[in-house]
Image (cartoon, rainbow, N blue to C red):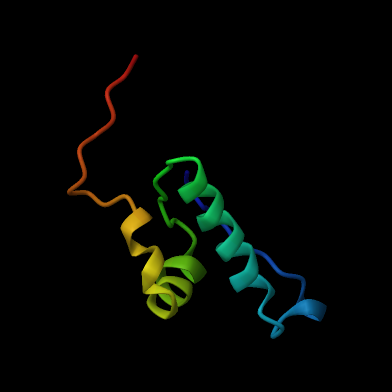
Length: 69
């Protein structure tokens, strides 16, 4: 699952909403046996360093490529 962008309107920022969106996305990925590609800079630079428990779901260059059907 590629998380490409996390957006919170300016009037709602500073309330932890972006982190809650990310929590839900990572929980969804875990429930469904998915891996995550954190393309969004907020996720890769801010969220994951603050929430390292999700790092096990992050797809890295070292992971084997899925086979095509």
